[in-house]
Length: 490
Ligand SMILES: CC(=O)N[C@H]1[C@@H](OP(=O)(O)OP(=O)(O)OC[C@H]2O[C@@H](n3ccc(=O)[nH]c3=O)[C@H](O)[C@@H]2O)O[C@H](CO)[C@@H](O)[C@@H]1O[C@H](C)C(=O)N[C@@H](C)C(=O)N[C@H](CCC(=O)O)C(=O)O
Image (cartoon, rainbow, N blue to C red):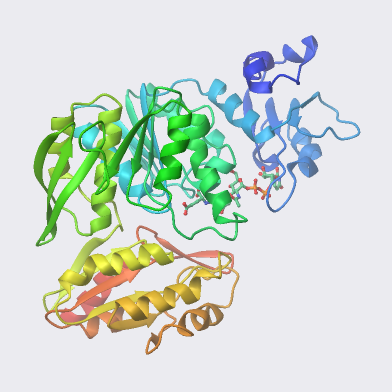
């Protein structure tokens, strides 16, 4: 592809220009990391959180880069250098041109919790309605042809646009994907032709990255302020403090606001939840949309799954699917892996695995399981290292308040001392036990379960590894539960 086709004026921005000789260069790929540059690539130098890509321009050229894009030209480069104001945005828009195919219908969802479930549910609703559908997010890419695990919730722009292009060429017409605040802040999803945006909720998270909650919310609201085009749908859970600001942002851009939830707009385009009754491991819901009443059985545990289901339903309706069919399809939703997933039982006590690794999510998961614990609700959890340390005592307090038995264990300690992370949680988790080894903690919790108890194993959800130091050791809560249950039988 010619460099001028990759970096059109809309990609470069008004102030930047490319000389004709440079414009005619043939580019065979794009790279944002010098270590993966191949001969013929365009290298985009990005000032990141740990280092500056500009430091690796020579390495990129040595690896075969034929041109470089960045925001400050070095004194001299052996290949043409194109200066742009925002290299991250240029990178995403160029990636969208390099990988041009996209499904006709794309929904992106943001919010602190619920993104993975909403992406999975929206995909399931579309599948049920007969569309070739896919989702991309924390649990990777799920499409009719394959499941590919990924490491980021919103992949980097090159990986994201490549995946979107591939699935579109494979015939996927409907895509739901997760827009993390990092992804939005770092322009990873710019260039994706998003037809509708969803917003679940906002609570404390990623305070190691965002300087303030306002910055965190502003990153999320880029979805409505800059990415969903005017006339597109904005499906917003209306039950939170930040809902009004999200609705304002969407209205200001001229989006079709669909407010969902207990405070949803049941008379109009949104969905209002008028009643929810727990029934076994399901919930009977009464909903209202455009003044019509719908009674359904949602086969999921936890009030927060109602929010996820309604945002998903809104995204499907907002992108043109028939409301009655969409609502009916909610009766068939399957929980995403490791999202309040019932993974076994001992002495009649259900065992759940959930990804909750932040205060609000832990509180919601414990509250959701309270109806299933007539006797004791037990929780096993820890906190990740090298991430927001401020949430550790808050999570300890939440566990002590909402559970009857607490075991503090290791999550992904990364480069931190695991015992120091545990100590920060234990400082507020009064009466908690400390068992660092996560398998041993899970085994100990399962061994004490009796009829009337319920167990929550929180923090790692779908993950299949534990990050200790720089190493990823194989670890899965699902496997640890299975091993503990099997050892009891033996
Ligand atoms: C803090 C953060 O978000 N970092 C992401 C960011 O890296 P960065 O731009 O800060 O990179 P950097 O390490 O400072 O390096 C700057 C530049 O130099 C380049 N470089 C570096 C070294 C070298 O030898 N050569 C070279 O070219 C790098 O490739 C990069 O382009 O951009 C990279 C490419 O997109 C991401 O891989 C990287 O994710 C790191 C691995 C990460 O852990 N991110 C997490 C925090 C994250 O993004 N999480 C969210 C939220 C999940 C949730 O909702 O809970 C997600 O979407 O997954």
